Image (cartoon, rainbow, N blue to C red):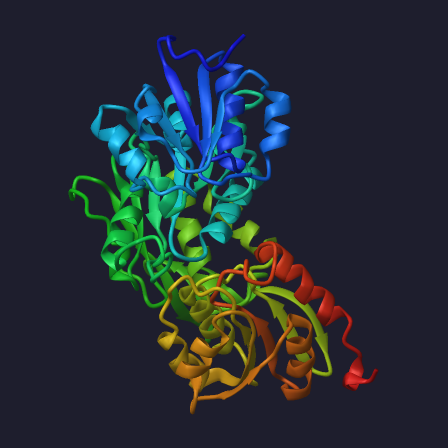
Length: 456
């Protein structure tokens, strides 16, 4: 069967041959739909394997051809491609439908969807809500921007519940999402190389709330408040005493507790995850889980054993009284702020920060204050090391390092017993690594190679 027939009733062009584009191709092929593929790269990594699997599918690489795109009924745009691309805009103006994989997924399922976005912590909260559902014996599918592409979640039949992490890029092409509950966890500047300003990024994030049945927002972050009618039920979470029927923190008998309204739910010390930022993540997950009927006692039990994600404030080891944490997934300033503040508030010593990489046009100024409060030193690597050093100058000791390994070795020398060495780059990784996972793996390997007292 040819999948490139222009004369078929519905002809789709998939734009982007990455993880999402490949999942779209599998989905359309399984349905016997006609499609072709375009990729803005001249030689995408998956091209040879794709051509072998789909030899009859037309593939065009390089600059997008608007005249060719206009021949499609619809364009399935991958998150890595901006819908503001001139050729895509021209096709849309000619009447071609623009959508993404999330819309295809939403049109195919009837099960309730928990939709989670935010500048930071969305992977942790998505995984945590998924664990809560599984622990409550709910048949749950977890994916989206995290892990499994949404269309691959349909393999093997529909689940009882879906928990989806959604990026601002995915939300740009999403029209059909009608989440059972939706949340924006936080909004801090990110992807300023793609968005003209914070307002545009904020608008993209707010799309998660469109047509939702229930909204959860962060009362400590005004930009997360849903721009919705009061007819849509809303609940908030905050790192302070909560209002009635909202989620927050209470002091009870000298212990800080997760709480709903005036009811303490459990002491935060019982959580396996550390830091105030993870307390916020727990509160958000409780609010989301409650909205889809997960039992509170079961969710609290999940919090007692859920240790967080790899590369997200992940404990690596303790050596000479110093703890080492891998937060390689801290790819923007907001994530690093959350890690420094969350771990610093829980710490007797100071933080030795390892940061740097490709800052994606970010302003690092917000790192100055928390590093003044909790920082002992900053070891800086990568393309934007100097930009970070400029804002931290005078607040904390800054030292440039050529490699991540040398930064880890320098951190061991600078850290005192009771301190914490934190890799939280505030930057993307592609100037030096294959991705944040690779960066985190290199950090863990370098930390594990350290010897007591720094002896060779």
